[in-house]
Length: 343
Ligand SMILES: Nc1ncnc2c1ncn2[C@@H]1O[C@H](COP(=O)(O)OP(=O)(O)O)[C@@H](O)[C@H]1O
Ligand SMILES: [Mg+2]
Image (cartoon, rainbow, N blue to C red; front, side, top):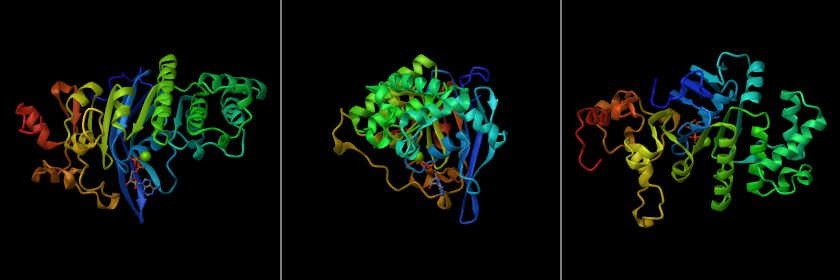
């Protein structure tokens, strides 16, 4: 069992093992997400971080069973949601598990809310479909859910359309919709990226409260390390479709290990540091066709050496407390010889 799977099989709200997602690019299937494993306990938040294009959303879409047909596929691995293995289910059965046990919110609510339907109806619909509630019962429940996510004047606002809400309120509607059927798992993909800082904090607070009250396991996808520090217990860093580091949040911020994790942290704006100290990460995330064999970070890595041409394993370090995918670091940490300038 890896460091990112503390939850036992029975206790896990979500368990992912060896998930590999391939995309068909110009007629060639390429692995865009490789061998990702983690488990999410009820009430726990696991953050998935990395620059744009690292495979975070694809991981989420794969877990949700929402890969575009013919373009994306689950090439290997198991997905177990609330005790049910969904990776082997037919689409129809998967749809039921998805509606029942897992909810998802996105950066832009307008892409998942229907612009021509009142929000109350949109929240009520899955309750009629998945919970067998009558229309009246479902609308009553929709009103309660709107109150739960603290939308003022919920009863009246049931009849409003998505565009009549502010960005923050619209994200609350999305949350109400995502938790309508009391799922065990919530995937939040950049849920506050489009919001200004104050509204962002309010929405994250709300998510935290709902999570504690309902014991939700949350997979929080973000490129914002500040959001990770204040909202997650564990963190998984992705680069080029690989998990390159996984750790408890405290350990991670005290001492990021992987060169990519360090680069991410050095590029992060902080209140206690002048912005002139920010170190942008040189280079770019390669496209899928350009990704190198071996370590996928090698083209941007200051520690690069010959051994990096072979794909490094995700190696337990610090007594198994955390994992890192870097041969150079794994060797140093095994020998317990801190390398100058990297501690
Ligand atoms: N529908 C698609 N067609 C082609 N390439 C895609 C598609 N979706 C994602 N990709 C590619 O897969 C990689 C991972 O993307 P994604 O999971 O969206 O990254 P992230 O969410 O971390 O920003 C990127 O290289 C991206 O360009
Ligand atoms: Mg994304």
